[in-house]
Structures are given as C-alpha cells and as structure tokens.
Amino acid sequence: MTGWPEAGYLRFGWNGETYRWSQAARQIARKVADDAAMQAKWLQCEGTWFVGVDALPTAADGSIGGVSLPRPVRDRIGPRTDLHPAQLSITYLGYPRPRAGESAAAFRYRRDRDAAHMDGLLAEGTPKRRFMRERHDWILGLPLTETSQGASPLVIWEGSHRILQDAMISALGDFDEDLWARTDVTEIYQDARRRAFAQCRRRPLFTRPGEAVLLNPFLLHGVAPWQAAATASGDGRMIAYFRPESRESGSDWLRQK
Image 1: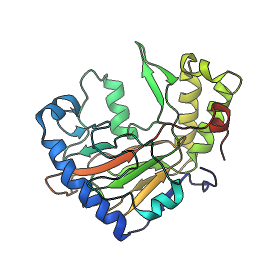
Image 2: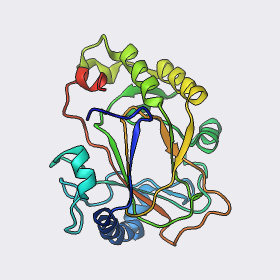
Image 3: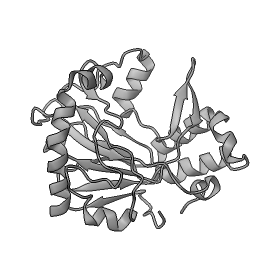
C-alpha cells in the first residue's frame, strides 16, 4: 500500500456491501463468542474482553458466510487470497479489568493509555522486551454491532505512524531482515511512543456496521475504556480485524510511504 494520508488511517463511509458483510459476520461471531472452548481461550480482563485472535472463520479472500469483502475495501487493498481468519475483538460493559498475570503498571497503561501499541512488536520475557515478530500490510477494522460512542471504540494517535516508522528504521534499518526478530527494540519503541503521546492527537474512531477503517501498520492505536453511560446490545462491541502478513521485502516494508 502507498499513498497513506498524513493522519495514518482511512475511514470508509457507510456502504450497503459493507453492511451486508458485517451482518453475515455478526451471525457467525455470536456463535464463536458463545462457544465455551472459545471463551476459555479468549475471554480475558475478568470477562470484559474477548481477544479472539483468528477466531472468526473468514475465508482467505476475506469473505464470510458467502458474503465477499465489500468493494470499497477491496478497491483499496487490492485482491487478496492470503488473508488469515479475522480477529474477533469484543469488549463488554466494564472494560478494562485487569488481565490475568498483568502487573499493576500494565493495567494502569491499559486503563489510562488505552493499551496503545504498534502491532507486530511482541513483548516477551521477564522483564518484557519488544521484538519485531510480525510485519503487517495494514490493519482493517469492520464493526459488527451498533453501540453508543463511549463503548470502547478503537483509538488512534494521528500521524504517529511517521514517528514509529522512523524509530523502526533507526532500530532495524541497518540489519538484515532475518535478524529483526532477535533485535531488541524496547527502548527505541518506548521513546517513540512517548513522543507520539506528546505530539499527536488522540482520536477515538467510533464506527458503525456498514463502515470500516484501514490503519497504517506503524500507527499507534488501542482500545478506549468503556464509559459509564455507554450502551450496546448483549453482543457487546464487536469488531472484526484483518492484519495480513506483508509480502514485501523487509526493506520495502520498513520504508513504505
């Protein structure tokens, strides 16, 4: 993907095809969320967050229940036949609560900073260190349920992709791609994140079924706490996310425009 706007994300307005996809996905998502084995694996934060990585059984072209990915999205991302099953991210009334094994500091960060992160930088070990384990082309979010605006929307920091991309070029640009996963980027990442908080506007991206958002892979993003007056159906706030592994070379991916 090229030609990202300075904000680092794109919003797709309401579209009938997108709405049909969301409704087909919601019917299947309900069954996934109600499955006891899925709950045992993915229901976290004292029952307020269903993490749902690869939990929604979408096809490799992004279709679900015989409904194709909507044309506005396909026109932007191009034809894909290598998409992973979508993440089914669901938040419920009361999010966030502490996640099992989460330190007090980590919970405060979840609550006060929306657990803001760049995808693909995985935290490992004790103490946690960050490594580039995954390279994504983009992050596509498709809301499945109607909610009010305060029901744990996706949050982004406008323009933060430039700061984090520059940081990753500094950290990894001189290394062969096969060394990236073993290169500790913790301090560089944390410094870039602090600068993004200080310099970039925090923006909740409230969306409804029939809409979609596409994020630059370097964009700092997270999930806002559920506000006291927020409302949603019993299904909670459901969003399906695709984040495919990039087919670009490491250098091309790292320095994309």
